[in-house]
Length: 607
Image (cartoon, rainbow, N blue to C red):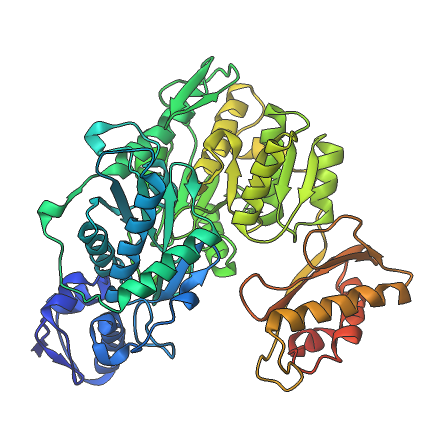
């Protein structure tokens, strides 16, 4: 028998007290206090768990991190993403020193942006999801901000939408509004990843802002060194999530009355709906699958106060190792998990969130998944009932059936734009600025933003829209359970077969030569477009903002270049697999001449 402690040497690797203290790793906590046998099967189990523990502690081991950081590689569009925990094949590049430098850089950037509008000390709020590297990165980025002379407010476990809301909430007791906010998250990526999202009261920062911050951080990093915990006098901790959840409850409750409700400075108007004002979800059975991310609050602090029975909710406790499934509404295993729970517990509705709750999806009482095109159709039906004729902005891979549903069935306008939630949201904002009314911008990934909610992609707010419709439908006698939602999209035509291939570009292949992967990919797209005239069955989409989209054989395909990676994603939808193969065969015939392109997955589909 052997007792494990923070000072024990485990399989030749010694964990420091500091590492044990900072790790947000439930599996470590379990081993730390158990006395366990290390013989036979138990021995093998402990060795596997020990490897997880060693990986968790990797951030603290200087020998496991790269010596020189290329800050440019940390940029992922309008976010910062990196490897924060050792243990895999990738070298750690989001260390505590890097985080500290990024914190100082954001503080500098914020001070420059705000210097004309305020003379008081600036304040930054910081929150994080359930990742195991969250605590150490929180302390480091806070240190960088405090060292620059700004105040810091720590929220602990939080959601990305809540962090933005902290910049527009007027609550002195919560130290709001914050001048800037940071969310420590890497969305649905594996446990060893982490990153940062940044906000001001005008919304999330853009690509140019992130480039600026990383450039500043690179200069700061050369002279930075992690000094340990920030003292309590330098910051305060606030429970902001209770306030955020309470606002969501009030929105549903207020939907039963006339007029509007002011939330975070936004006046939300409702039609007169006859609901039970305090507990409008009384009689509904709604469960939540948080995937061990940050969304567990929704069951306890939103659904229960509204009267819902949440029996069967699962994976509500934060666990940054994500032991049950990836918190991702697009993930097959995740959707199977919440669907299984709905059917097992005979729930009216199941709700699933991604790790940081800026995306969501649902499952109706029959087990039908309400994600991707179905979720867009459902939210579009609700929004178009409130704003007839409005434009719905989506990303590029939405279906032809969705276009017909929005335009012919609902009387709206479908504006299919580019991939990337920020691209979609910014396009919705742009359309309004030039006089075209748009109230919804939503991506198939589950990122959905409404004009009434400051164009914030908030998974919890999207689900609130569904809850209001559920309660209103029952009150109006339109159906029980999730019937009212299912009926809204019963005329949505869906493809019989849909698939996606990711054709990777080998950047080191001689066929690429001196070109960048982007230049090579664009050459592939040009060749495909030029070849369309050779097949009379195919028609290029008359209006398209990304890649080459083509209709034919009763379906369509879209070949585009990834926003960040050397990949050409190919999406195909068709009535049958045979029709999909005909579309795929045309693409294969064109792209097979590009030797640096890995077409093996497409080739396998066609054989």
